[in-house]
Image 1 (cartoon, rainbow, N blue to C red):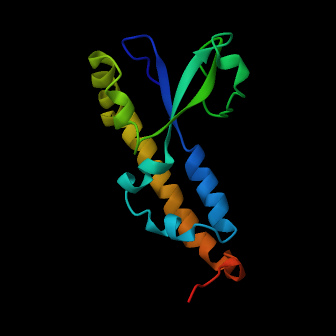
Image 2: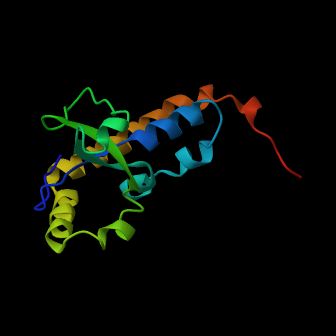
Length: 142
């Protein structure tokens, strides 16, 4: 998770992606899962996370948990409300140095590897899940 020049800590999480995969396993939104064929298709499902100090408005938000990486000391993870697909509308309000740093983070080898790993996991889910989808939950409209 990078710290931007302004001191803001941000990160990426697959919260929306995991929710969509869970829904697809129940027969809902399978078309969305099946449409993911590239890293760019993941963008609506990769959430931007802010890390906020407890007591700074963040303590009223239930922290998100991540077994892989702990938030910076004394901070909790808070969903920003943006995904990689929608963040551009928010970026205009960021200082220019933060924008440059954010794009550098997205272009970094670490972030590219993370996004490619997410795509690989979706492809794996697609190939193993489809035989188990409950097609009886689908409805057709005339």
